[in-house]
Length: 249
Image 1: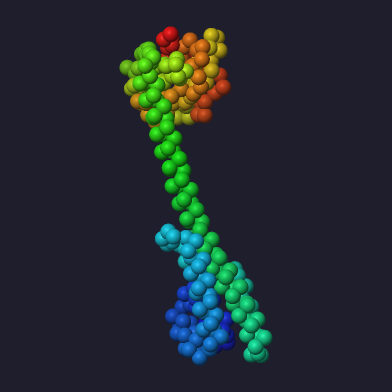
Image 2: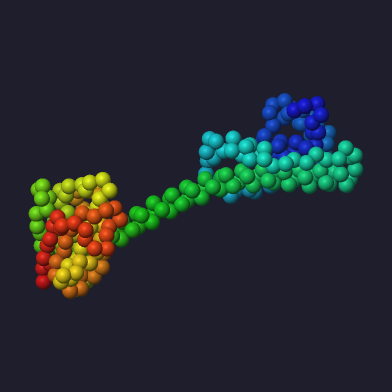
């Protein structure tokens, strides 16, 4: 702070605890004698408090640095030298706008953190719910009164099985000891409808043992195939099947 600094312009920075020690001491001495500034500080602190309610998580370590960097980009207008009722009102308006911009910057940074954390938590919750629904549907097929199973070797000591329930029109593929696919590849399941292969889901490339509810209805499919496909799968098989199973009738 220089000798020419107008202490009246520091109300917003003081309310946000953005003054260094020398500035704070000088401003507090001024504050004890200036009712206009005291009123502005009370109003700005109340505004900052209300804005802070928008975020309820601990702020990240860099928050203050980020806020101060944003504050430096907000122009602060100095009041006219004449101290009149009108100039005090104008000064208060400028200070309020300056502090409000700073508060909004702080709330935006905090709100961004809150939103990100909320999105992460919501995404994790949705994934957990989807996994639970998948497990429940797999269990329903395996426990169906009409469930039938067929199995085959899948090379390297691995084994693939298909459990089908015609009453529910669904099938589950069970892999045991399946080798992980090469980088950029994924095992894809298919229903065999005569000569046509119909996509029926992608296996998790990071798991060697898994149970997967096959996508789509069993309908009149006669068999199930497993091929190695690019990440994301294919509309039609692009490689020879690593496993073929005939569906039990």
